[in-house]
Structures are given as structure tokens and as C-alpha cells.
Image (cartoon, rainbow, N blue to C red; front, side):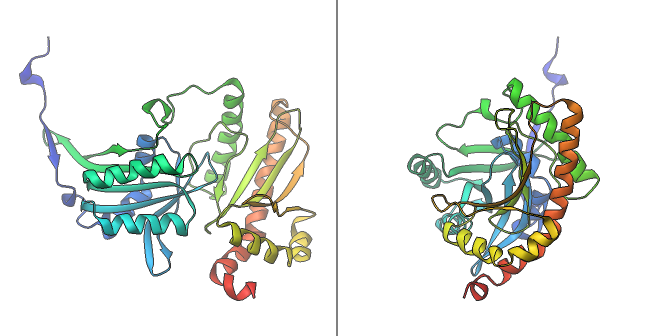
Length: 323
């Protein structure tokens, strides 16, 4: 029988012993360890950039969820939460058209936790707000271990929705297996991404390095029999249309390198899409699926080669080029 003498003593550690400052130490660490935060809030996070500029301000961490097409923004704060950081959080959420907003602090004041609860109640499923306290603990002189503790979360969120706790459906597992192999190849062979885990949807997303754009492979079922790779524009609605039109103006040069593309402005929607497609479905046999993966790898690399410099130019000079 275990006795009290055999049990260790848990001790809370001042986070400044490990991270002396938030901007210089904690934020860079978090950018390299998003999986630890993602495991707590149920997201498969991939870093886009740290210190992302929004006008005269800088967001601590910008990321993407591998299973959704929305921006994930993370604002960090040592000490108690305050009104200034709440205002910054909302500014960044607007600037990046965020789908997921995470505020990390040592201690949440009740009024700020209630503010996030209110925002979750009012915004519905389009934007989700998380409040997370960061702690360090050790047992009997062990190395400190980080603990992210949820204090505010979306109305429909529950621990059962965290990654890995809900078994995938048969179709979902097919997609997971298909995209896991694709992701591993893009990461290990081509250094295209740092992403580790595949989701269970018909598509997955890869950051382009520019806000509001992603490279997205998509594979339908046998009913539609379609495989495609797309550049997906899902930032600010007005900017999406402007950027799309600017890319269309360069269509001849782009298609001379990529071949004929499908250009979808989607005027009745927020997003735009530029894609290349072929036949194929998740219901194909393994040999056919491997050939589809190889095609997707080739197209993703080519999309990055062709669109990458153009997206960087749009991000640097959106106003001037739009005139």
C-alpha cells in the first residue's frame, strides 16, 4: 500500500524563473511549443509567425489550426489580465479576421474572464475565445513542467472535444491516414511545413506565410470524384476580392507556369479560390491514392514556387498595387 512518505511534494514555480520576460522568452518558447497549448484547447496548431504586425501593434503569436481555414491569434501577458491587453486582443482579432482567439496570462481577473464568456455568447461559432492561465509546477525538485489551465472557453467546448479523445469515423480515419502520409512527406522531405498531425476532414491546410492565404489539398468521395490543390483566400472579405483581382491580372504568367487553373472569385462568399484539379477520390484503392498524393505534393510545391513571391508582394504593397 502506498504511504504518505512515498509521495512527492508538488511545488508551484514562478514562471519568471524559466521565462524572465514575456516578449523575449515566453513568446519565442510558445512559438516552438504550440502543441502543448493545442493539446489543452483541442487544436492542432501550426506556427505562422511571432510578433505579427497589426498597424503600430504586434501580435505575439499567429498560428493556424490544421483542421480549419481560420486564423488563430494568441496574445500573452505576465501578471494579472488588464483592460489594455483586452483591447489589444480585440484589435488583433479584427486585424487578422481571427476564427480562434487565445489570451494567455498568469492570472485572469473575474471581469476579463466574464468578458470572454460574453464574447463567446455573442459571436457564436464564427469566432471562439479562449482564456488560458499558464503555470509551472515541479515535484520534489524535478524540472519545471508547464501547465495550461482553461478559464474561459466557447459555449460548446468540452474536454471531450480535445484532440485524440473522439474516435474518428470510418471515413474520417481514411482521411487521417491519407493526409498523415502527405503531411509527413511535405515536412520531412520537402521542409514545406512543421505540421505533425492530420485531421479527419476532406482537406488540410498549409500556411503560406502571409495572412489570409493557405495552400489546401482537397479530396472528395467517389460521388464527386475530384482531387484538387488550391490557393485559398480567406482573410478580410474586401481584401480577398482585391487580392484575387490582382492575381487574375497576372493570370497568363501564372498559368504559363502552372497550367490551366480554375479561378473562383465567389462573389456571394467571403473567400476566393484558385485551384487545379483532377479525377480521384478517398474511396480509390491504395495504389491510386498514392498516385494522388504524389500529384498533390508536386502541385503544392509548384504553387508555393509560383504564388509565394506574388503573395509576399501583395502583403508588402497591397494599397499601391490596388490603385
